[in-house]
Image (cartoon, rainbow, N blue to C red; front, side):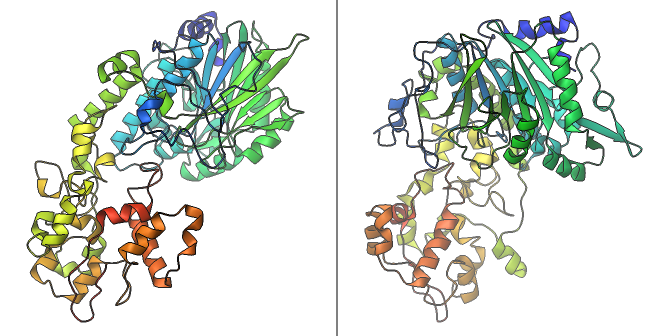
Length: 594
């Protein structure tokens, strides 16, 4: 069934929401035009620029190729179909280091750039909007609702249902958006069934229409006319994911995909305006999608799960190139765009472009001007205010630190870096001269879009001491001495060392990367020498096996915060000299580390 168009009022509602030409998405008033072509494993977007701000509002180039370079010259597509998926609750780059990619703000700017070109545009999302992991359930639900609100404002028609939604509990997820109001984007998972008394329950009974609405909470298909071209979309869950979900939730099962797709195609073809392009939101693997494409050539576009967080530049093709099987990666770092061009003799030519959501798509202008131009920024700011007002920071779960587990009788606690300077004056002075000593200031004074990140534990965790551990950071009122990245961020709670500074066992706990007596990193000169070399030549500098092991151990500890997403520029050999410090000579049997 195509629930969107079962009645004239239903069809009219879709067209009113989406518009006929520009689909009624947000109007940013920007003229940002994208141009790009990219490398499979890296994202070399003008990374040598002196300032990332120089990119904003300009046309990005990657490997010297503009966006849509292979599309027909001087011809607008009859429809530009924007495809996204598997965002997993990532709303916005953290902003601690640049360049970074992804985020709903940039997606809105990019989509508006297509409309500025005069292209009729429609958008679909595969699903998996809900966070995969979450410390606070209420915050995860807020992220989901914000994302759905943002997609609505961007002009999305439909969204699939993925593993993260099923894992969170589908009833709970539905309550955040679909139950609130009948509005796009509509959820699609046509083969979804309930289970009652051990027997399958029709989807319409398991997830019935809310009062006063024309659609079930989770539908099979939708249809909208974009420009003058009817576009149909169907959503289903693949066999492999279906089997996982049935293990997670005994009240859910899935119908045979073949029967569901046959009914969906029949229903779409029965519409007054039969879709000329059909899109399938397929929550299954690329291998499964390939088999399905061969069996159902009625779908010209299939969006499936990504095999890898970094998506392929070009889609797989089936049915002699008439079907595109598309992956768009994870966490909203990329957007796929299919251009549909009518052929003179009938039929369509499909062109594809994968677009990285890079710095060029940051909303230009002052913070006030940007917020007025891009409604997504207001959504993000409201979200941040709710996180603050609901005191999510104080609700972050806390467990024992490894040192607290190993020495439970000592009742080890965090004491703050100021306590360390009495005995470690030189090391304290070194720390005071590093950005670590005022790390929280970045969230308090610098962070924008949204602001107030110093109240969000997901950001704060890398800017303070011990947020996830017992006796660690609570907030600025309760634990101001644990603000910023301090000595105990790496060395663990220091109360035991303060009262028994010569205890070799405690010293070992504070340096877990040093497994044996005498283990130490290479000298500072050697590390600097390696850091000055291109990556390809660094292996030419000989290191002892224990030195390489310690480099890996310490670097892995740093990378818990300086990971690729939050700090794409992190390089141990260039970062370590900035924080390098020695330790006083340890007692016999201790593990001094340099």
